[in-house]
Amino acid sequence: MNNTQNQITDLRKSRTQTLTKIVSSKDEYRKYLDFSAKMFKYTFGDSLLIYNQNPDAQAVAGYDDWKRIGRGVRRSPKTIFVLDTKDPNRFNRLYDLSDTYGEPFIFSERYCVDHSKNQPIFHRMTIQKPTTVFLLYNEKPTLV
Image (tube, rainbow, N blue to C red; front, side, top):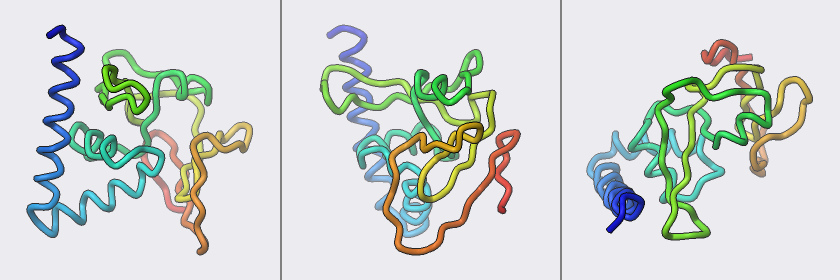
């Protein structure tokens, strides 16, 4: 097996181990549910992998997505690996907001918005109730 295949095998094992961990206690399950609410763009399996690699992640995206909204990825970031949903023999690299710099943006329960253009960045969720909005400046959320 080549290095990529080894990494994919490790990711699959990690996903299973994380699932076992989160169902082992009510507290761990609650922590995961709070976390996964922020990762609505990603599949269940991907959110397990993201949680395992960075349980404090606030918003994750690929390099090109961060660049598109005016944020760059810092040198030596903590890369988060997830399996590619279209090709089972590949994986994708994601980066948390804390590993980026640049234009601030608004993060809400509905969607992420490019602060400078007021345009949605990530997929929109349908929510029937009013939502709380957080403004992210200097990577620290402030309730508005």
